[in-house]
Length: 429
Image (tube, rainbow, N blue to C red; front, side, top):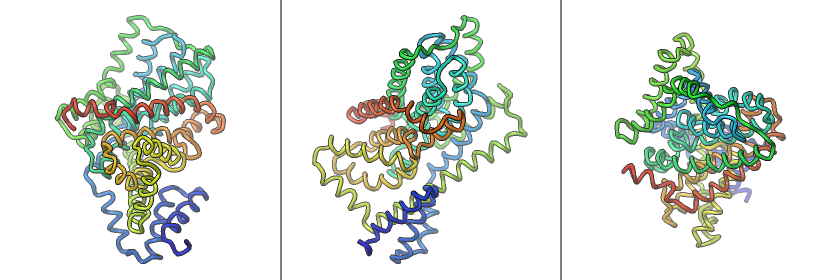
């Protein structure tokens, strides 16, 4: 074992990870150590870096990140929250249900879970606390429902999955809509039940005049997903072109309609989105190098064979896949999981004839749950920073919400038609 590169690849990865070294650095360090020690060709590293990010669909990522930043600064979320809050009124759990509904909508604007927590948390957590919701519960609802952002298109996770598997990004976007709604409904039912037990209510019901005014105020924001997704499925532009359209539409709304963005603040928005994009691309390059090293030394083949050897029943295999992904979601970020585990799962997909688009949705729902399962629970960390609630206290509140999301995951897993219906209807799959 001490002479086995597979053993040392895992050792070089997990030791830095346990020492709280960033995941991307741990992946890159492990890969380069194995490449160097076992003479796999250290000169291939630079080429691997370039090949990992020099892919056309990945150019959509910085644009969607920038679009999300612009939409947040334009205060579109604030206006949409106000509109939905007035419509729902003082029903039991009204504000908690509003939070999930707004997260569903915001998922069509921002493809990042942590960014959604940051955008919605500063507005919805204080609003719920003001209406006597407990602070940990309010933070938990925002953190968990924000995971919908990587399921509802446009999604950075779907773009990365499409790049790795050569699956249609447009088909993946369409496939995420119904599963995203299913997870959202499961969360709404759960927060309603909890709110009913604890006596949580919504805000005041708006008059028709107030609702109409709030609708007009939020109209340009509500158009955002219709323009992005309508353009893609109407054949007007590709998902990558849609990302650029989203940026310019957000600038138009923020500068000329709501006038919440000045040209002086645009530089700060570009810097913020550039930093976020850099983080994503660093993970992509190092995770891709780790995946290549694992394939070269035989880790990928051995892992695939091990999973397949457990059972010939595809339903059992799917349970195993979900368990592996849920555990991986506790330790790794979504992009790293795609690069590390997809090469292992692709032979399994071929053996059992699993549809790649549906399998992409299945993986992404797992990763959305992983964003709120400690210890690497990025959404919880962002929510905790906003509200000041400890991670331990927050983790207790999200348990029933995570269980609800896992229930929705099982429905999505065993009914592939729910994911494939819209891509087939739109004629893009």
